[in-house]
Length: 145
Image (cartoon, rainbow, N blue to C red; front, side):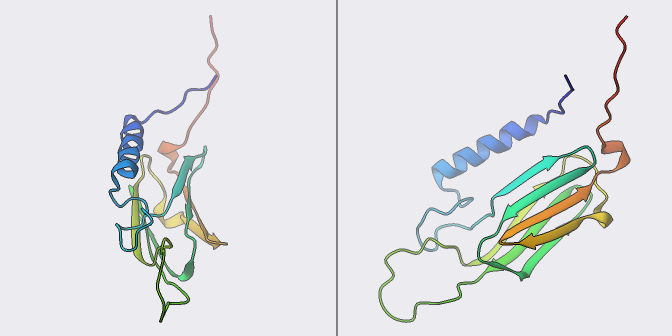
């Protein structure tokens, strides 16, 4: 059985996000036009060698994206544009987001920012950031006497 790295702030972030959804703090779309700001949904996970982030960005073009990384944070900025604006008639519902967005994620381990790579396919942004040697998970079997 391996040792799992635990970050006490992960639970606080999950709690904040849960309350945000309940209270409508703008971290998710409420279905009302102009209600709050949109934040892309992301998955972030760690492998032995990398920190990997996957972000869902439906309706966003590659040219409208900007990804920046420092030693301790990752920022995804961009803009989603409606291809067809409604010029006449009544809008009954507008749930798709249109406008600028930004999402900054703290990085809990050291990464090699100059070696980070990103790809964007079918509305999904994949970012792979190699970890520094100090941050890599090392497993060693310990003999039991």
